[in-house]
Image (cartoon, helix red, strand yellow):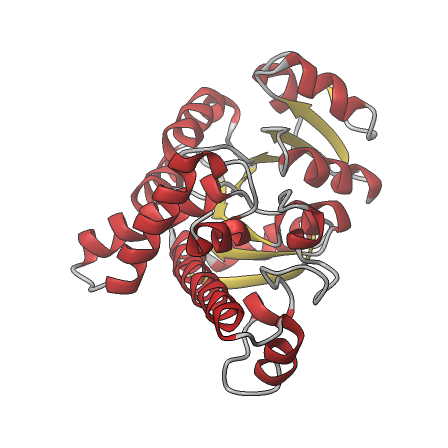
Length: 291
């Protein structure tokens, strides 16, 4: 039986680890928070109290953490037992840290994949996430059947760090289109046009986007929209801001122009500073309305 160590049991990590356990993978969970370890034990995941206990005997180590520094710290700590294993990092981190993690894995004799996700908490719970993977073909081939237990789409995007590159480019498009969609609905309100009329027209016209037809920022138009539940996430504003800042750092490093990404970063920063960091990112419509 495949054995997996899952490190990082927060809002995304817990349902992802639970999906692995449901699929018959012996999954050992670890987090610095004892309460999160206790919680995931209810999902069929074996609770462990140390990184050493989690990684001991595991074939694959999966990390779902908050920053590149955290990923590198964990990978450094478990590197002594890395030989012959597969390391998968599902965190969203900067490209340079992802590449450094790949180098560390290679030096330790492990295969490695950076595999950030799209789909949010709902996708993690339903095991319908999209994984955007970077790494060597051999490593991706080893990781793919494991990731398929947690997601509906597992894509190989290129070499080391290219999963992270794909994720931040995707979220630039997402952040910008959500702001544009919210702006259009607020303009419609000012013009006396109903939400329904705009939705029905734009959803079959050139204004169509995922932000409109799946995640509409006004309620009662799409069933999966957090707007239907007072903007409970979903995907938090704070996480969107984190990803946009990563994209801006990458753009600066690569010498790429990102004017709309820069504006989106400023708007989400302002939205977070007004107390909306824990609300779904589609709540940006509140800022556009001036609420």
